[in-house]
Length: 68
Image 1 (cartoon, rainbow, N blue to C red):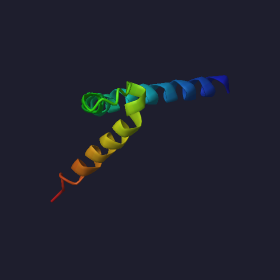
Image 2 (image 1 turned 90 degrees about the vertical axis):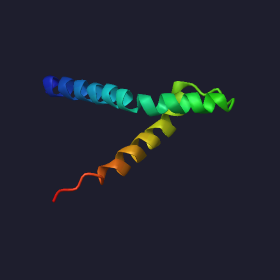
Image 3 (image 1 turned 135 degrees about the vertical axis):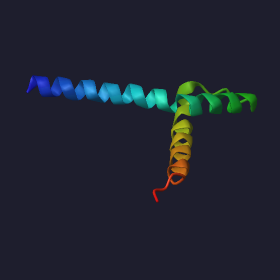
Image 4 (image 1 turned 180 degrees about the vertical axis):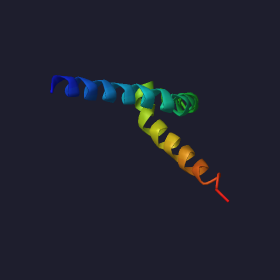
């Protein structure tokens, strides 16, 4: 039972690290853009919008490749 718990925690930690790496480019670009507007957001402040932008970019490109 302890082994299953340890594997689950390790899996969740891995998913969290991958999630932060994948959303980093969009979040960083939003920080640059919003910084020029004078909002002064940190990475953690821009992360929710970065997640949405990453999902939007991913979903908009998903229909570009169709099978024939």
